[in-house]
Length: 208
Ligand SMILES: Nc1nc2[nH]cc(C(=O)O)c2c(=O)[nH]1
Ligand code: SF4
Ligand SMILES: [Mg+2]
Figure 1 (cartoon, rainbow, N blue to C red):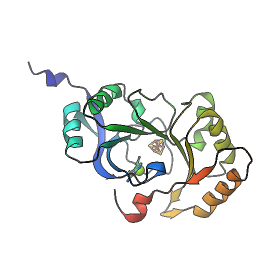
Figure 2: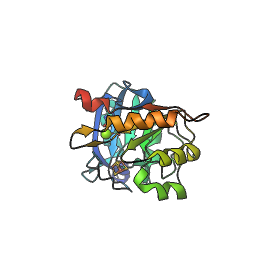
Figure 3: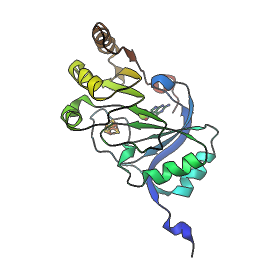
Figure 4: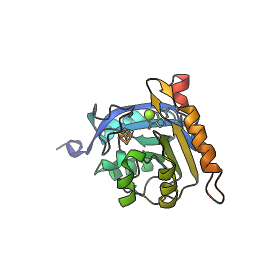
């Protein structure tokens, strides 16, 4: 009997190597493991998270090992939806990788993760009011409307080392003026966390 037939499988959209394009780790060489499925449906989502194929754990490990970066970014879709995510993370950890996650922050994060980047979504504010993660390394919020109140709610709910605003891209245009205007308003408050700009630099320079 081949024990590999019992291997866990994961919905994989794509696995590729690039530079982290966003947030405080911008420029870090990374292998991106993009998992399928999501528990939200943001209208401006840039990922075909339902276009996935099932890959076994060893297929994923082989692909990740074919690249040179030692930072693995688990992204999606929403990667925390995978019931067996810890098995994948355990295998990657055993192989010596630093593990980062990109999550919407509604579900708990497995303990194997070394760096949490979370992007709470203002249009789903009620869900975040009800329950979300309470700590992260960085918070990045997309400016898809008048979201100052949501940023203030998230500051209180999610303690992080860095808080970022990202412009929203619609029809190829970024709302940068709206984004930096809101940055100015958030940072004019006394005794509150300072917010910074995070741009999807990979899109500007045309890398994956
Ligand atoms: N270069 C690059 N950096 C990224 N950071 C987060 C990404 C994502 O799609 O989750 C991403 C991505 O797709 N590409
Ligand atoms: S949470 Fe992320 S992956 Fe899910 S729909 Fe929103 S932008 Fe897309
Ligand atoms: Mg992306």
